[in-house]
Length: 228
Image (cartoon, rainbow, N blue to C red; front, top):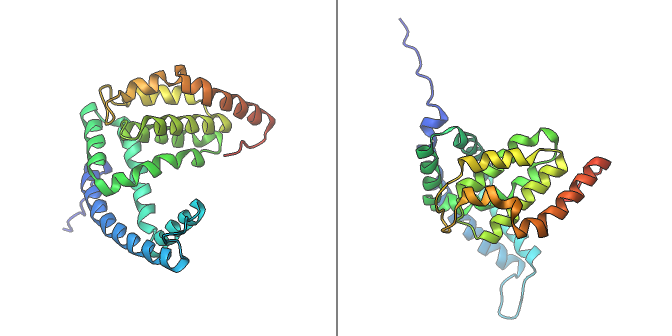
């Protein structure tokens, strides 16, 4: 009688060892990226006592260094984080706390986590991109106020504007994200749940987000894509 092949572990059971394995590989990738970045700077003459390089040249050098180091692992990291963001709201409060802690404690992964958060507005383009909005809001909840408040406000505002432009009801998604956010003090000493709940009432929202939401809604009604 043939023995049956055991089923692979579920993502809920395997995300911690996968995170640890990614952390080790990303440390090595970061070392190679830094080496390649130094080479690119030298090749392009971006360093020097009397030279002030343009921001676009520095960004291009970073992109080239990542390409040379092998950017495939960044796609792997993004796919892993997408799965983790999908798991997070389905988890018990203690398991959500563990996810926040483990991501914050994986130094190299966490160094790449904020760029992952900031990628979400550009990924929201159509009315059926609601799950992407939800992931983006959950990613902010996982960051848990470790980023500066100004960065969090700006990223959250861009997410909501992108959702409005795509015809997505961001209000219900924001409310759901608040329910699974940390109700206590996060990495910055503030309450992530409170920030998400109160964001539409803040001065930043009224000043910087509400006008852009109105414009995005008008553009969506005209059928004209809103500029990113």
